Length: 387
Image 1 (cartoon, rainbow, N blue to C red):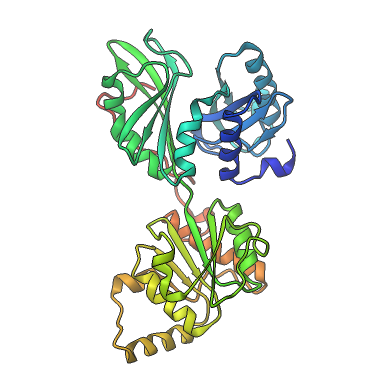
Image 2: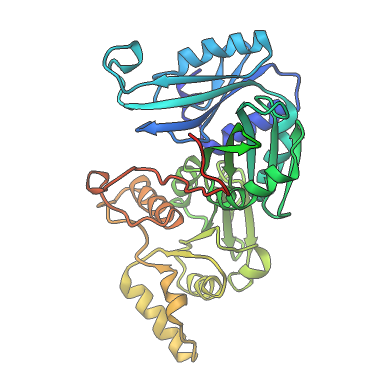
């Protein structure tokens, strides 16, 4: 696995898994299914390992990847999934020496089949889902690797492998519907007629969109960094400005439209984050007016505070006033206060701000944060989980 493959965006990892699902490629999927204590990555993190040992994605900062690749070879040979526990918290065994995670990580390794293609297609189409996989079972009705998924838009479970009785899916529906849009995961154990069944509920949310309005030289760094941060990026050019895939190869899509037709041209929802940086006062003002009328939670506007005040004055002359809710979505001057000056530094402050809004975080130093760095899923089933 090259360093480039190790650090690819999660959207690229999911794309590689989906592609492998529909090919003759022999591969193993390794997924973190449970974490106790601290770990570099959280449950739901995936790594794809080919038959030759090459991989895409990462589970740790490089601590366990060699061992996982070795285990993947045995999984391919046996054709059966296996669950492995790595205790990185001790001082006496090899996993506790010099590793900074200080937690216990459970990893499911399974031969990749086409069972993941349907839910990954849902995500690729912009939907959310929760994949449910059997890890352990005392119930003869279930075997390790049996899988179903909850289609959030359809509001229903769909079988992928094994048989899933209605009494089981009914008990999982509330949790699955909560995990899907959050993109979080959790392992739970349910009791079924005195038999314990341990399940991994893996919420996979469609990536958020970052729409960048502008086509100047300062747009490209924003596009590149946003793509690496797992945004799907759309670049929009105004008034014949050149916004093409050749100019912005990292963008998922390029569009040309008029500022007053943004809502007609684009699908804007609660997962859309807008960056307005055309540097044209009239175009930016028209774009702002369109965007605050949409469900977009973040409208980052390039320029100083005085420029925004001039926009508001121009709107007032046209009897256009803004509600508190509309103004709450506007972030100007755009970006976090990082002391940024160069194009890439400014781009980093912009993408970081959009990411903070998306994750509902108030930017601060992690050294000042109490508790876990990653939010943990809070699942409640009809009967208490048996861990």
